[in-house]
Image (cartoon, rainbow, N blue to C red; front, top):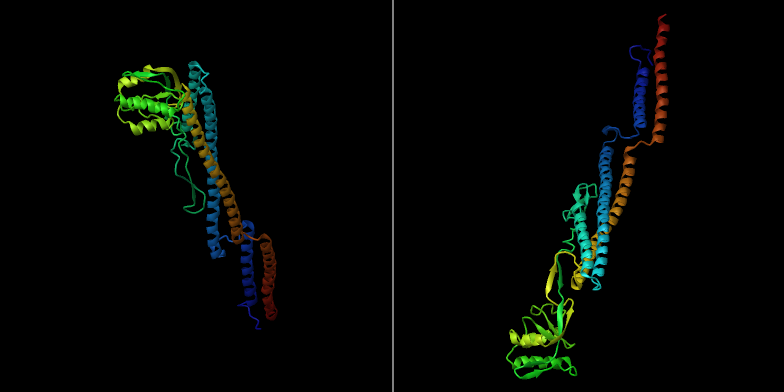
Length: 392
């Protein structure tokens, strides 16, 4: 090899190799200090794209998990309020049973009605004021809401909570049948003929006797101010035709309805009423009526209130059951989201993170090579010193 001084090729080669080693050493140092294998797109272009997409999924999944947790908190808030509503309704049920007992005087029932009114108002207040994040939950406005429980669009769970006020629960318009009087009658004398109820005969025979009497005397039947004869030998009178017929002595009324359809004679009705010997109130068989609020003013009202309260308990139970089922679903949703997030993070870590042990080996190798390169560069620079000996 020629001895030249213009081009020290050995030094140039050593310097080039040293530059390569220094660059690799710098990259290893960056990876070790940052903890990431990919610090820029140039480190791994495809890996960077996959990693960023996974990061989007991971952060979305983590936030979706938070959303589901918020949903659980909302459900717990609503369910807690409904739990108190249940307690109120159970107390109202207890009061209705108490008020239905006819051992109570009017003053006793008035006191019960006062508490029923207060409890009904509290149901309305709970419905109007129960909120989560300034949103009403129990007034019917929280309907068709969506909980975003996924990292991607359209991954949601619907949630709706019905109106839980007293009106919706059926406590503001309570339908019932008012009590009706029953009368026992003695014989009736009309136009010279005696018509007497014979206790030795069956009820149908006596019924036909009175009906035939009405027919013979030109009185067609009883529709308005209905009077029907039951199987116990008593006439049942109501102020409206066939009112509450499903609860009354159906057979007798059907007989009257099928055979006679014209209005009864005022005189004939007057005869029946004048012949009555006893009067008794029969609950729940009279004309239909409506209570505007829970009331135990009498037996019929108390029973109607009791049925309404029990219906309200069932409605609240149904809503609480639906919320409980949704809460259980969301708890599984949270567990799944956390699991998917963890596994996706693990996959992203394998792409993006530095294997510190492996990179430390690489760094140590490059460090040794850098020291060797520096030494060889120094030796290469010394190789041209031999030229000076020739010039002496």
